[in-house]
Length: 307
Ligand code: RIB
Image 1 (cartoon, rainbow, N blue to C red):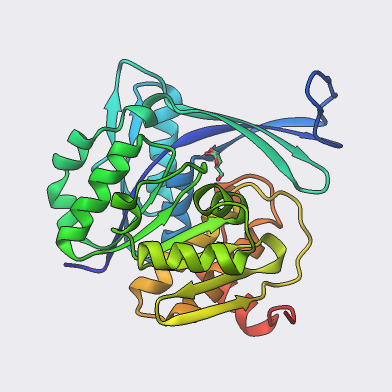
Image 2: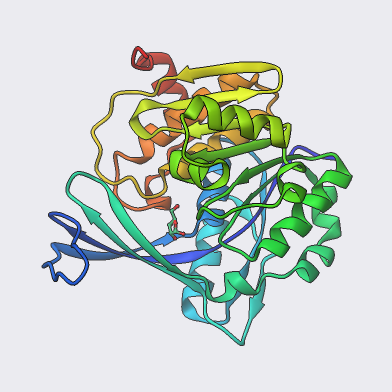
């Protein structure tokens, strides 16, 4: 086993409209500007980890189109090994329509395209890739059976498995009990464990999965617990919010990079908090992901807010 992180997940092109406020159902609102960005939770997390200094390889599926070619090139430019990324001529590269309001909040609709055709067979055909991994990261913008195959495979090799169950979905115990770290927001936690307090739901999820549970709380930082770690709140940093798209992905990638470096649980979460805070200060998903030096600088120079 090497020190590699393997990301199994989605690659998208994000079409982003910035507007004063988010529309209500049936309402039309004039947008202020429109831009495209490289996105997709898998690709975002791969680049976030690479920018934090980790060696990263990615398994994903692209359409045979200009969008796919550009997204692949962008991963390479950002230091992600794309050797295992496959192409599917039957479909198009994944895309997301994103609305971002002035206060930074967003709405996202994703069309999976090629991402949803990444299959368990692709996992089987990538056995050599999994042998390289010290840690694997998966999210839910690919089919659940593929996620399940990936975590089973990783389990056999002894890699640390990080699951970011986003977009939220109810998950079987066969998946939950095979992961080592679960990074999710409050909405995703409520979907999996029911609408209770964070303390109760995170505790239940830790018990059920046996994993570290990290609940991201936006500007408030994260709540963490594990079988050997009572629930604790770790605050984030004071920053000016421009766009929250990709903040969760920045968190996951930085957290994973810290874990492969052998950082203790709370320190790895501090990397995640800092990367997430920096990511909201710029527009776009991948364009906003911070470099390792920026993450370290924020942790050193701008202590997290008091809880
Ligand atoms: O987490 C943010 C990402 O979600 C965006 O980049 C978009 O592609 C959607 O997948």
